[in-house]
Amino acid sequence: MKTKGALVWDFGQPWSIEEIDIGDPRKGEVKVALETAGLCHSDHHLMTGDIPMADFPILGGHEAPG
Image (cartoon, rainbow, N blue to C red; front, side, top):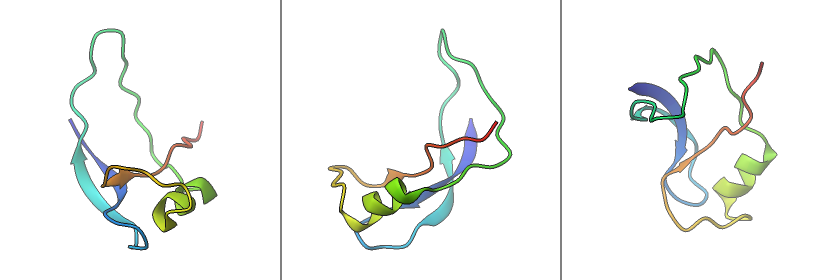
């Protein structure tokens, strides 16, 4: 299953909107169709390195509406 996601590839780099493969839902999971999602200030801290993450790329947008 494919969707679009906001990715950052290194500290200080801009977010890029890219097509990503998220796989099909596994047992006990459901597929939810989202029309929009947003980046918040926590995502900005991930991008700048204020909240260090070990693995890149970072997929932003943990606040889904609805």
